Image (cartoon, rainbow, N blue to C red; front, side, top):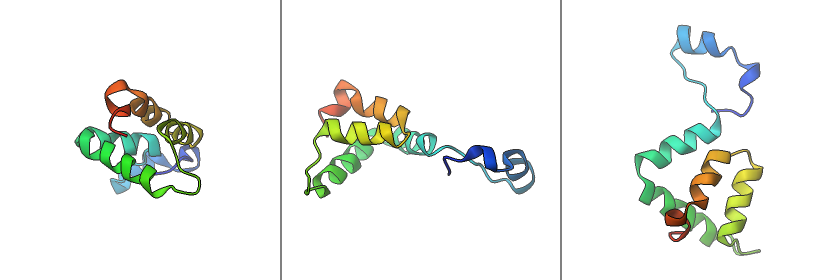
Length: 85
C-alpha cells in the first residue's frame, strides 16, 4: 500500500512476485466493504481518542480528504455513516 504508485514497478510486482500494489484509499475502502458497521466503529473510536483538540465528524472527514483518502471521505460523509460517527 502506497500513495507513490508511479515509482513502483507495479507490473513486475504483480506479475512476477504476486504482490498487489494499491493506493491507501483503495485499501481502506476494501476494509470498509468487508464490514461497514465495524469500520464505522473504528472511525468512531479514532475520533474518541482525539481529545486535544477533539475531532468532530467534519474534522475526521476533512482530514481523510486532505490525506488523499477521497473515497473514504465520501463514504464517511454518507448520511447513514455520519450518524454512526
